[in-house]
Image (tube, rainbow, N blue to C red; front, side, top):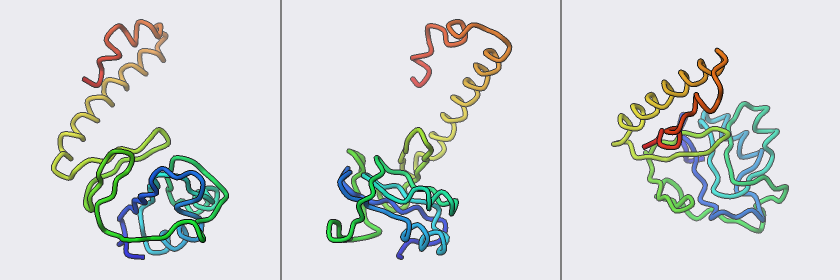
Length: 148
């Protein structure tokens, strides 16, 4: 595996959901080599196995079909297109159960500052809800503009 410890593997699978672009054996090998996780632009398999390993795998879908005879690796450590986004080696990624975001290293400070601003606002909103404030009051008319 070409990925180094701490790196994230990004698989350009072109949105395919008819065959897996990543599976349990790859997760085991990647985890053993210290890879931080995997993002697949398409389907993956063996998520229970990856989860048991504590190895994060994110994809568009889960299918039982292997890549054998269906998918071939053509290159690595090169720009890939995920959806409509070009991701270059060295770009940053943040992923959780809600989605995946890629951004260039040069934007790290801006992204972190904006994420902190949103987190502070949502933390205050949660506190207000837990203190009994009505949801429509907490969210208010400007909730939809929160990210602007």
